[in-house]
Length: 450
Image 1 (tube, helix red, strand yellow):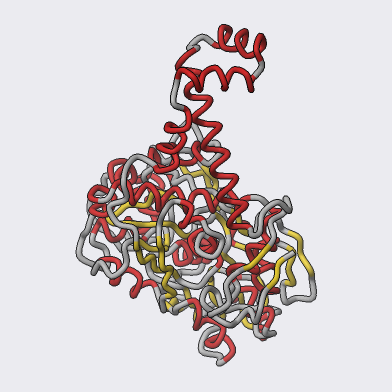
Image 2 (cartoon, one colour):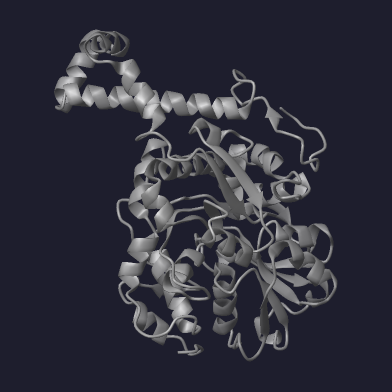
């Protein structure tokens, strides 16, 4: 049971009893779980080191029991010191106080919830999560080092690295923040215009030029024969301003992150035409990003920050945690949304604005693994629409920006199972994408700028 004051009072801090009932708050529960997991990993590592052969290890444990085995081992090996060293991470934090910028959308859930629910503190970090007006501001403040790291759209680190839209700076994306979690929302007056072929002349908003929202909207309309540069208008609008623009009739619709789509329904000004998961199931949306300089110059701080976020992601993946997370991130200093709106997004039980209540549990989901094939697909769309030109070393760029190795190691530490490979094929609107043939994919589209 959670106890809150006014959820829109920025001075209010989350106070909640945990699900198991043994801790005063969910943050304490998460910290205890993390400590227990770390202790188990140390114990298992020591046991494997002393008994490398599985059969010998099993015989020893069977003979004396796990509890006795650990007691015996602790007289020979300083388990307590090992556990403390593990909890401290690879070394001393180079920097404890950090600023991480975010846009107030549910895509940033792990980055946001890690603050009120104690995941940063668990890693010894004092993180200020800073609500930011728009993606260009996030990019510029991060490049200017006002932010140590940031919540970014997954294409942004690729664009920054390649110098698309800004000077080239080596950037990294070690974790995906969310998968799915977007939708195309249209103004209520267009309830009878569900066929995209009838959208000629429409004005759409997306959050940023270098965004999955832009690429998925373009992909969707192009597959229906609509040229996104000739038949419709697409403009960049910060997510917090989208509903107001829809209400004012400045735009006909948007492909937006949530809770923007659900807020349009809640306010009675729009309806959800299609969820982005129905365009591409499991697509990446937002990401945790940091400069290569930050990653290499502050390796211990970087590791601690990434682990806090992946740890929070592991909690966010569990459906039973979604309602409490909605309460934690809804207040004014985070999303500034009614809890009902955030809860509908995170739980997947929602009104669609057409008189239906839908149940789509994976409307948004949380999987931190940065598939390098995701990066390659994004690069093909940047090439398709003329944002980057000339030859592109797809494999090299994806490998250097999407840091799958770092994610793999830390996912294991928090109890998640990373995939065995870094690349996979997938289908977008029934069209197969083979990451080993990106140029063929680009050239396969009838509507393109290249």
